[in-house]
Length: 265
Image (cartoon, rainbow, N blue to C red; front, side):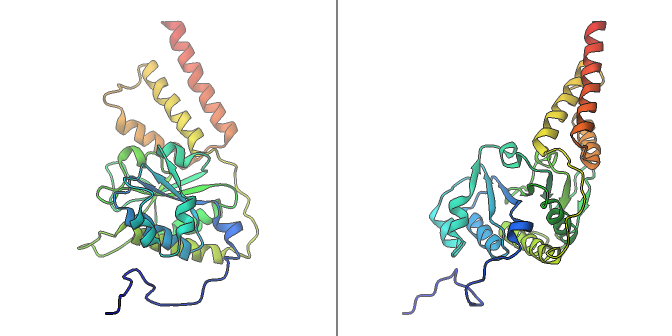
């Protein structure tokens, strides 16, 4: 009896040539998977990435990795799995990233700036010329938590059938990886766009922690009731995307406010 590999290529084709534009367009794009439950989804995501010339895979607290099922589903993208970086926290995965976009299938109580897949790809490939960027995917069952969405500058939503809108994790990775590939090709012959040197996500997180502490110190917010307020302030500053000098000014103001409160006390 003939044995058929259920993970074989449906459309066989010759081995692809090296991606000519990967070095300048896609090398700085991280695909970040948070808390992935099924190792097969990790392998399928790696395969989708390799199809589209992406190779920066970051795994935040995966349930099972490395795993034989992940390797089987990768179907030749074993090198991506071997180089995948397993991170203890989302902070670790986003360190140094100048832009963070989260994939979300639903809106939250605080509206977040949202991209279509094509808009997302164009923005990310443009930003990736200047430094690392991250596209973040949540858990298969529940997606991104509010705290994880707080780390994103934007969200991206894949439009689908409203009566059946659930996409498998690896399918979502494939759709957005394809858009990134097209955007990289479209920008291949363009010169670098002048862009402001905005601060990285981990530096912004330090500012947000400073802001939260200052608001508590000066009596502006109650720690038990400030989550929604802080989420709105995150949205404001993530939209502004300050550079290093601007952030230093803001933190100086916060420090002065804290010092004045201390002197009054």
